[in-house]
Amino acid sequence: MSSTNSTMDTANTVLSAQGLVMRFGGITATNNVTLNLKKGARHALIGPNGAGKTTLINLLTGVLQPTEGKIILEGEDITLLAPHKRVGRGMVRTFQINQLFDTLTPLQTLAMVVSQQQRLGGQWWRALGASSKVTERCEQLLEQFHLTAVMDQETRVLAYGKRRLLEIAIALACEPRVLLLDEPVAGVPAGEREELLQTVAALPADVSILLIEHDMDLVFSFSKFMTVLVNGTVLTEGEPEQIANDARVKAVYLGHGDEINDAVHGMGVQHG
Amino acid sequence: MNAAQNTLLNSGRWKRWEYPLWALALAVPLLLPSHALIVNEIAIVALFALALDLILGYTGIVSLGHAAFFGMGAYSAALFAKLVMPDPLLGLLVGITTAGVLGALCSATILRGTDLTRLMVTLGVGLILMELANKLDWLTGGADGLQGVVMGPLLGRFEFDLYGQTAAWYSMTVLLVVFAVARRFVNSPFGSTLKAIRDNRLRAMAIGIPVNSRLAVVYTVAAAVAGAAGALLAQTTGFASLDVFEFHRSADVMLILVIGGVGWLYGGVAGAIVFKLMQDAISSITPEYWTFWIGLFLVVLVSVGRERLIRPWTWFGRGAKRGQP
Image (cartoon, rainbow over all chains, first blue to last red; front, side):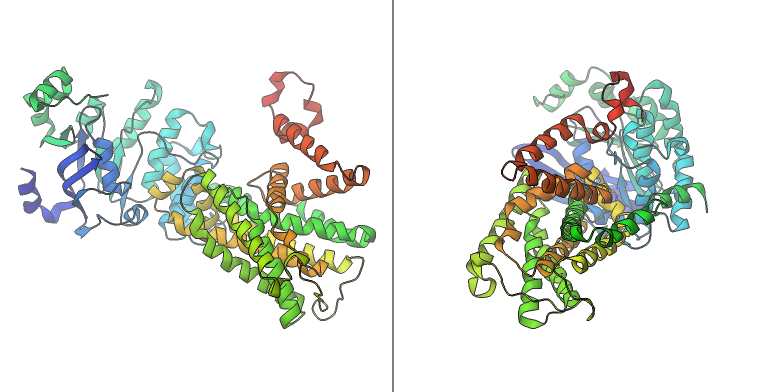
């Protein structure tokens, strides 16, 4: 099914993973995964714990090198490209566990990221923030992510919700064309959740987004297309209604997952 | 200019109190001519500490072998004066260049691995260079050191005098110039990407920073600055010996940074002043046991914390007061 998709809609496909396989020793974490992200997509990737979602992200961003298969970004093969160069080509991710710069303030963090994005990262004589193009973009981002009030506090003292917003703001400061959101609302307390959900919903429409999430409310409200990953394999793909009514998905994911899952696949893999 | 821009630029600006401070420092050789020699020593050690701070404090690369570059600068400046020409500024440039080239070559060794592997690799490079300087005695004079280095006058005018006044001004001026340049460097977009690598290498990579190339550049710069410090030492003492490569130099400079504070350009300067003055004062009282007191001071410093140690009024307050600025 996915292979016909990829031939039909090549022009519309921004990011394409083709037949990705990742083996760690004897374990196959990603098993022949093909996934196409369309332009401006709101595409969710779901699956039980241990389905290989984060491994797939690591493959796409270049942290891991796939054992087999290739990755095409905007028509070019980037399978062997270094992680930081993929960012330069517009593919950016956020992390499930915040990866921030603890001793910098949100303002310094964003100024640094925006400078790097505007190809000023190698500049060593002018001060950070000397370019008003950089600082204007920083102010926009601070505003957009509700960080203006805390822009001058060290990141390590910020509340968790604010740290989570900064995590996404950093990714957006890279001006991505493809954004991989790894569980953006994971661990966010109820009071700070709404702010984050609104921010995620308001992300620019021309950015193609692949969302990895356990939170089904967010997944179904946000995504227009879904891929279900189980045991490193694509179980099915489709529109949210299709997925919600798919018996296999219900069995594997929404309902009493593990027993049926194991029975269907005849494997004894445990889900953490 | 908007608020964000102002906030960002503020951290790199020179504060009003800094100008008189440097003016005073430059006046010390004149006011206290008998202490010019120690002023010279302090300026050199401060410059060396500043070099280490660039990699340790700003980029998070630990090193126990930074004396390799200090020694390289010292020997190449001394050899240049002896074999080519005695001009101090050209010699300084030679010291900086050779140490920088060595740093660029060695930077390949610190890109991978953990802090522990870096400690070992840098330590190893330092030992190798010391042994090379020892073995190549036809060039370096081996264990006897490189003697008979005669320096020409500075800028063709100022002779190095016995009391070390010229030397002190020379070293202090170099320190000030490097300090000012380093300040721009660490407050630039480039410098902020170094801090990003220090704080979170994984994320730095994920926002498109070419981490390895940044590490190589800063390691080269830090080596070049250490080379400048070494060159100053050889030039102002007219001598280069194996001592410049010794392990204790690498260890001392790390102590100095710990005393003064890492990730803060004044840390190296403050640490150098405290360390050298303590060394001077204590060793004049107990020449054999001064390291005991330095050791004790360090233990107290790191267990009490620098912030608390320089604020005696907080020593006896209740615990609740601790968090207050």
